[in-house]
Amino acid sequence: MAPMGIRLSPLGVAVFCLLGLGVLYHLYSGFLAGRFSLFGLSSEPGGGAAGPAAAADGGTVDLREMLAVSVLAAVRGGDEVRRVRESNVLHEKSKGKTREGAEDKMTSGDVLSNRKMFYLLKTAFPSVQINTEEHVDAADQEVILWDHKIPEDILKEVTTPKEVPAESVTVWIDPLDATQEYTEDLRKYVTTMVCVAVNGKPVLGVIHKPFSEYTVHIAVLYFLFLFGPAVVGLMEAWAMVDGGSNVKARSSYNEKTPRIVVSRSHSGMVRQVALQTFGNQTTIIPAGGAGYKVLALLDVPDKSQEKADLYIHVTYIKKWDICAGNAILKALGGHMTTLSGEEISYTGSDGIEGGLLASIRMNHQALVRKLPDLEKTGHK
Image 1 (cartoon, rainbow, N blue to C red):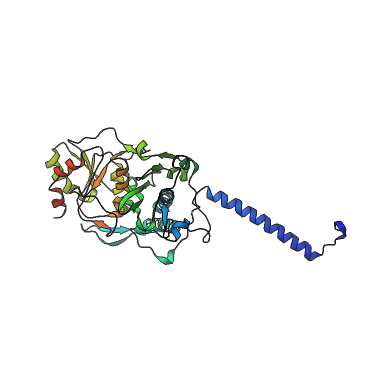
Image 2: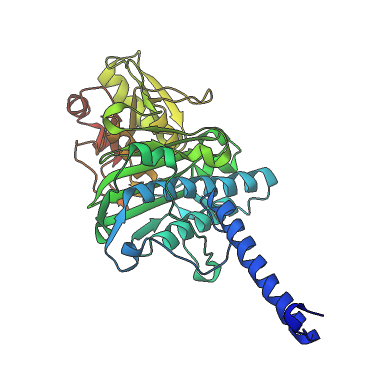
């Protein structure tokens, strides 16, 4: 008999048990949510906050949060790129011809990486314009949620949000840079990249090398961070604009007879003018991928990374190829401009006609003046 003379019917016992199970479920689901938050990613297919409250109504976005999500997006995209390449089933196809007449290739790695990167960023920041190299199919929509928590070690150093109007922000995604080399299994050239531009100026860049587990990400306005590798369990570091970064310029560069990194597809164009400008001792390094070429100018802990003093491109190039590298160089005091020395705006059209010149710790404008004929060569 129940205490106090109360008799519980079988129905009452069943209701009591169900209530108990409901409480246990609530507590356990909260525990799981906390565990998923450690990885910055929710496993639920829908529901929950889709982005910062301010961003949802088109107000402002926090660049700290955009950095964390951008790094996570680059790493998640890189996971897809690596998985497809290792499966050796690329489903390679051509999107047409480039302006130079080469095949503009696309693979499953491009498509799946793009889906992860685009929807992670779009779910977190729905009011922000996102430009990406690959077509986004609404039928393949994937809701990937982020819990909006900045890691404690970053919060200790960057104590206040960096808010900017959402309408001023443009995100550029390259879900797989160096697709041609990817199909040839030249893995060292492959990167995934995210860039955030504010009013057309690159302020935050992420370059991830999925086959070396090396990630660079930098914000230009007030801070630099390195955080992405913690996602894959390798390392976690931070840096501030005026206090350095985990990625930095090398101690010296050869301005008189530089090593110049150029596209594999048109190294001959640059070679002719470079030898005329800098002399016969100049070295030309053909390489794939704009992200790889920017990293060639820096001191990065990757043994497969070649070293160069300048990066020159003489033909049309898309902005998602170069925005992240531009942000990184700018953060470190370097420069990326057109061949005529003009700053590149990351609004409007998705490409630039004037080629590009990238340098760091050199007199950039003097280099521009040294190469007066290079742009003409690239547009013949």
